[in-house]
Length: 575
Image 1 (cartoon, rainbow, N blue to C red):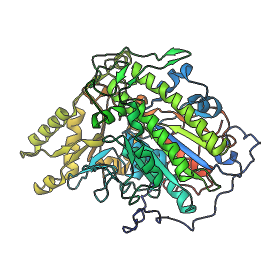
Image 2 (spheres, rainbow, N blue to C red):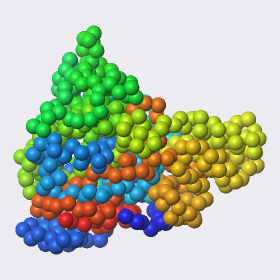
Image 3 (cartoon, rainbow, N blue to C red):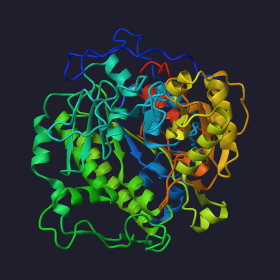
Image 4 (spheres, helix red, strand yellow):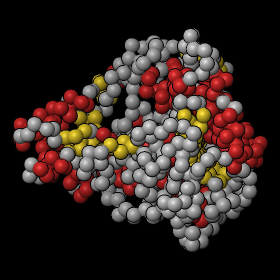
């Protein structure tokens, strides 16, 4: 789906009152335009091609559940279709709206950028979330996407660069708009990763994230001074501990065990990659940090996240009245498994089937508590996953592994040959971007644009680089239509990205083992996009090109909210 090449000017985010411990009073636009009227009624099917807003009944859903399966490529969702149970993913695929051609339009496809896009309907050029981390261009200081040294985890140690608040997110989420319109609405984000909880929760929701040191979930002092009673009770029960001494066993469905590459491939990272897989060592006497951390690379972290989400539904009364609530659950385990073993492995496929069974139980629990016909589910992924270069699929693409450190070193050597100086001019390459040290450039009387152009030329001489563009080109849009330019421009932010944005060739991955993501190619950019929620969403498959940024505007329409002012997306068409 094409998008205008130039973004609208960014609006400065409203200030958050620094003295309010929960930030619940930060409600922008409380006197905004009246709620949009929603046409139609529950029993009237929409005409083909109409959008969700036109098809929605007058009554709004009591609860919207946004599910993000971290690192799930569309190809994997489709490949395992015969193995799903009757009421997990199949509920969405068979009885909801399934968008078979959903594709991210930004180039650097990583967790933080994807979650921000799903929650806001905007790409990194507006959200400012250009990657999981970046270097502040003026100083070279490392920035984590949800890092905020002013806040810490409640009841848990907080390390440097841990994610504790959404202060780096520059635009409002659909949850922020909901709470601005209706302060009684509740917005809760839950994830195995800090960024997977904080970014969907936005500025005015509440985020809880899994703690690998304890197996518990914790919020931060940005949101509250102490946990509510239901969180304290959940943590006190230590539900993660029931997995101690147990193993990840392969799931057998009516169609058989999951297919995929055999266990123990030589490129698997860190572990042998065989099922069954133990979560603790034979000599471990009690659960500890190593055990809790191991649960992240398994189906258990997702089961814990869904269990905690159901506790939040009960504890916060989500969906209990006519004021709509939003629950965002990011399921992190799939990403950890795919990084270690690749999305084509038997372990990854088994993990998805385990998650399918977990979602079936979760959906039925919501039916019982909130009520069937009173809630809506949306499911997508923050990014897909590249093939391991050694796999048959990776070999077919000519895949290879590339080490970015030596690439940057060679670029710096070229710059030193031209401009002199012993200190490297390129400080690093986070978020697929070469960051030139502006301090060194100024000290040596050089021109930043000239250094950037020479760095780009040196980078393009590297075998694994598919395209590279300078900040001047990206800011002006002068190369619109050039290979990957528009996608790379959507990933670039003038205050947070470097002087040269680049992309690797298709099939090339910058990791020594396992696999990864972050490219603009279909393997990483094509993801599931599913909606379910009779009577608001009609069942059927849509093959028209859509983008994940279309989801937040769709949810806003379903909730009767004003359009998201900074969104790149537009409401999705219905089947």
